[in-house]
Length: 458
Image (tube, rainbow, N blue to C red; front, side):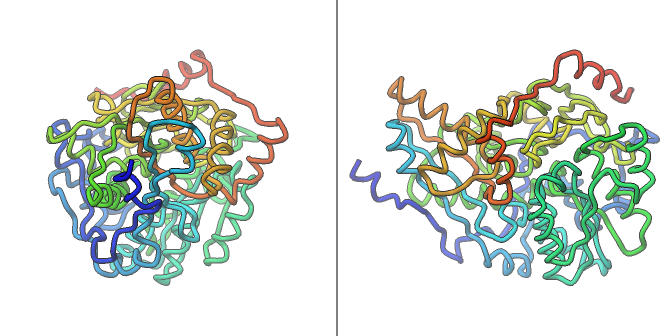
């Protein structure tokens, strides 16, 4: 115990210890993620085809399965220094409250105005857009963390930013919307009548609360039809997981500094950006046979792409204009229940994480919404941080494991990702406290209907 107390509550790296390169986990994967396919020809997308949607440098990062490390440009590293390195926290108070022999650590990514980890990739994508001489970018956002982060990055670099925000989140999270507007972004609730695809979705699904798949379709349509613009995405893509690896690299460096090795690594999973970033260097060790970890993806029971989806090629968007990706999916037409974990309401999962999951290198669980908010409240009352609903999925499983260790006496080291704060999610907390929150879970019959519509790939 004496040695344990030498570990501070918050472990910060020195500025000169911050990562200078992003880690590309695909370089160590024996089974590479399947290539994106052209929706018309069903052939692998070329760099030229992707260049019409994404920035040129990001296309190269997207397609590169072999380069292990990508140098982080100095300008991005300088921006990172405003809020990085972020703290790795030893949850001593939580351990004491739970009376568990488990050691609990969390990486806190909420110490910036966007309130989440999303800024790590937003500044990178905006930087490459600026370097390409573009006028602006378009994007989608669910709960609003990504849109907020991108609006901050674009404001910093002098780029225009057009955000399509999932309608249910637009209505439930007005303050996050206003932060985006404060940073100069235009914010449109999706689906909208401002695009052809939006009007089509509204006609087919009157009164829909929207989904990330809908918002992606609209953002892509605007980007590809407006000169000087490209589309950027906050999750799912290989390039995003690459940028977010800064999270895991910092965790690994901090833990190595104190001789800590996690047994269990837990992250919430919607599209995969937070989880992929957190586990990157640890998964690399696992792939290379240097260490083993129990890696757990936690998703909402209302949108269970890993635990109840199928591993197949599907459209990345509801409007079916984006490339096809092989991923665990519920079907691109799937419209999740309007739950409050807005950042996890995506019908598919990152192709990288889907491949790792299919290879048995990580596991997944789904949890109902009310139990997630119960865990969020339990954590907040002890650790003093109001967690985002998305992050609270990981907290739920971490608490359950710590309590199990209390019963078995196992001294396990648990690491989870706290992606951000929940101060813009107070409507959700209010509904939980007022007993107005439910746990809608799609039936097998419902999911089968969406699954039947998956594209047929030879």
